[in-house]
Image 1 (cartoon, helix red, strand yellow):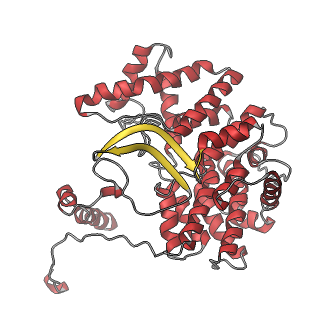
Image 2 (cartoon, rainbow, N blue to C red):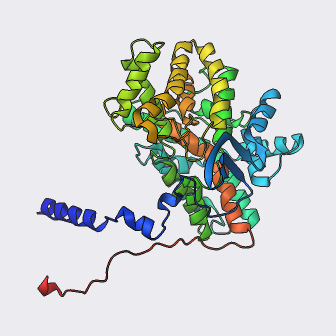
Image 3 (cartoon, rainbow, N blue to C red):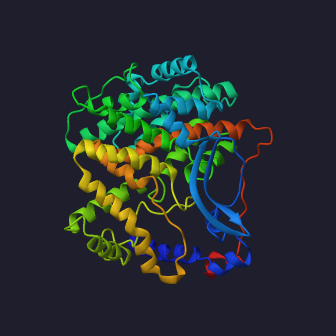
Length: 451
């Protein structure tokens, strides 16, 4: 009875959701907020981040090398700056995003100390919200934990600037701890491992502290490994207002809801495989290639296997080569360029240069394979994105794949909070309310006895 009801209901719902593609053209509706040329529809203004991958020339999109700017500062200059000074850059990046300027040494020292002082979670919160409630996905545990933090806040709905700033720093500081404890709970409940809950260490940087929380003091991490995790946090901290999760954060914040609800909505967006979950897809694809390509140095064999992937004959049979292509970047993704340099160093240190060369070969061959597969109609310029090498780095660090996307959230919390503050602070703010055109014809109501 129930099965037949839902079977018919499913058919009805499917029919009710059909919208003719021609109607989008007829009413000039931008599907997915994308223009015909694939560029994003301009829906807002921001001072925070800028993502550049093309320029418009005579109405056409002209590819250019990618640029990512945080508060006007090129990400390449920012990362080179703290790396040359032999220090970690995530706290400095958080300060830059929130304040709009780089801190001096004294400000940075005080800010890092303040962030470190906020890492601890109340014992009862950890027990009741994370350890006692089961969950098979860390992002879901993170989302409910963030909502739970609302109950610990004395002024959760206060959207004055000072309070929003305090809430933001508190959340950014606590994200790594919540994610680490969520992983420990999942590992204990579903994998039968020892439950290890460690207290955050104030003297460690954000990256060092996270590795300590999931691995402990006995695990030996090299300086390069810790530096690379810090670099990944910096590269993922912000990516303009147009990405799905940040836009979600701004939409919900524009309604003047509390920060905990807004952050939770952004986490839900990031969880999707078309957004934050893409790095896992990339790693799984490379594991599949490694298992099925006998000679990793044979270009023709790798090329043939990539064609099999495109033909839905290999990997997950989706027809997608993951880690390649981006909504904005064309010639290059600056995050991938920066990460690749350090990933090569890590490959040498870990004795995984053959695997790294396979990654490079896939990167080199994919544009050629895509062009051959799609033919003359394929004119899009594509490059690898940041997901391409991030999975390799996480693998070298022996970070479980359950943590890949949650680590993305740890980093992006900085950008999310900054965009919320901007959305609720600029003088011309208005609730974001897009319009949808209804394309169903009017229908008469039919009395129940006549249906």
